[in-house]
Length: 307
Image (cartoon, rainbow, N blue to C red; front, top):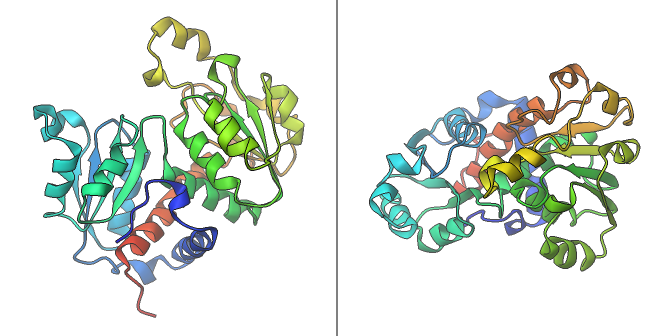
């Protein structure tokens, strides 16, 4: 039995196989419509989510399976003090696989350690968000045709952004990937990512504060929102929230084949006028998220399509 707590839980070869499967699902959805007949996914969401929860649910239903679960801690027995360990033991009696999102870092690992079914980490605090990373990798590979030889700009909240941390960890395994880290000094990437991940692996990167300076050199621009829920102070959030806004003028500085990704939801960090730019890939990214989560569920449940 396998879980996915970090994007590094799968080798590059296994990830490539999963992305190949996702690409086949995209081309031949009818072939996969019943591979999970009789299977149940439990979505255990202790904090709000739209895309991640609905994407997992849509993925399971597209495979013919069913979905149970809860969408907030308040609507679960966590409100009565039940531990994550006890919850996942109980869920194993009802479902074949579980996706968990929790505000505390490490909660998904605790769930996996006590689970009798495969566990998908759907986001744990500011730590990891591996299925978003799988979505990002699938989007880049599908639209760019490769995951190597890329310069990737990460912009916004690089301190608390779990999608950023997961993507960096995943992308350093591909050759000749460079990072441009664009953030205010207060929201720079954590030192353990800088030292233990980037520098320790000899990855080329630079840290800058102005998005305009980065635009001409990027193959991928990964925008993130300033996350209000990660701040202890309302004043601190308000001071930071408009640090970076991508608009048509800034897009004009970018390469013709650059892609703009965003894990969503956006607030105002990407102007609506950018949506019609062919380089804006964030809504296509959402669709790729369904395909790769379908592939992940199949992989963890060890179900195969009948050829």
